Length: 623
Image 1 (spheres, rainbow, N blue to C red):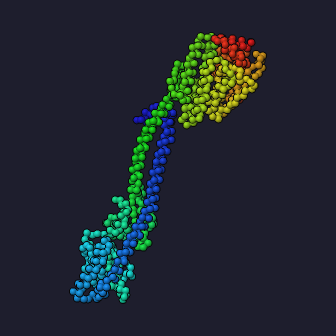
Image 2: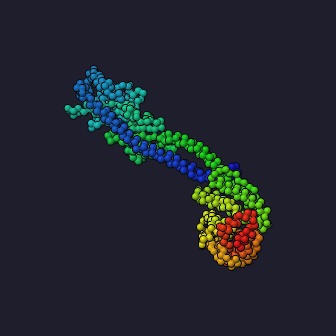
Image 3: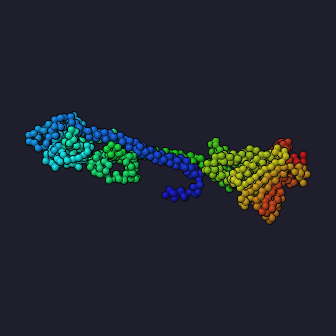
């Protein structure tokens, strides 16, 4: 619905306000969005890199600590050698009377309780000693699965462990405690040093709470896992007890055993860190979803995005308001210029700003006021002078030229070419000031040349390298006077018709003194030469016939030449005016001939207020 409404607006895409808003978005919204996205990705990457760097170090320290504790537990069976009575019982044969056997069990069980449970580590929940088909034990918890007739009694004399401790998991041994606490068994053979015989096998049941104490400094998250497994992947400890005793089937596919890596992708991506103990060959692993690591970052990102959209909304409203406010006077001025071009001169542009647009508006209003005053004044003079001055006034600033210039300024503003805008506004303002500041019919040649140069400079900015021009002044003639606005219409004609058919147009203007064949005096001659398309013979004959008439014609293709020639003839006499030379296909030369008017003669002329211009100038010539 909105897009349909927008497309009903003529050329809305080409509006200056629309381009300013788009430029604002390209300059602010897009860079800030990219900066936020890149910052978020970099921050997330840094979190992953930190986890990948530091987590294996923490796991390695924890693994060493676990190995140290396991080594301590493995040395506990040697405490049996502190009691000679216990060693003597273990050396006895198992085939004794029941009373003797019960007495020996009491002695050994009491020693086990005192040594391993009462004075030992609180993590030990039971000690079991198999010796020559006898079972000695002490336990903190009730248990099942072991008795004197148990089939495991051969552990007492047949097991060969080579003096090393072996780790057994609950599923490897038929021992079950009440409440099923997670534990592991450290099994070690007791060797009699004196006679080099095996006295039996001790099993120490160690509750896995010691691993919890070691790993308590880790920030346990509900979705993070921490587990300990042997080299084959069998899980010894897991934060989720149901996995203890199972096998990590993914171990073979892990790319490394020490360090961190990513698994999965998208929302199911995990960071897995591993550390392998050099003592026990156990692997301590930690895994956590990537989304958990970036959870706080995501919340901060969402807040920033919300603030970003609020700021963009506010700044966009300000940008739209500023763009409309900035372009409204230019749009209004352009609309008024179209009215002026249609012949409606009673217009006024109400702009109070003091910037370049305000200067242009005030110059425009002043110009229109001057135009209206001159039109009213010219109604009171002779018909021929009135027509000449009216056309002269109309030729000061061609509304079409004004409109094209404003359109060029508009495009330069949209493209961000501030220097070009300032230069064009300066040139146009100077042309307007030239048109309005000096109400005399004659100006110095240097001012007239400067006005023509400003016009050509604006056209060169519009057409870039397609237009080339040069101006040459010969002799000391800049302080002399000339009728106003005789050069711009000529070069305007050259530009208008030359650029229609030529990719590149060269205009050469030369001004100097020459002896006049008709006046017999030293005259000032302006020669405007271009390499445009030239004029066909039939058209050239019509123009020459029009130039021989001293009455200005209507505004058409002959307006510039006829108007200038008529005004010169009316002001200075029939011996002065324009000459036209053209070769079709090669170029055209316009020659303007006027008398030399010095400053003294100009001062005498200005004193004759309200006098007839034709008589005034001719009187000067005769004097």
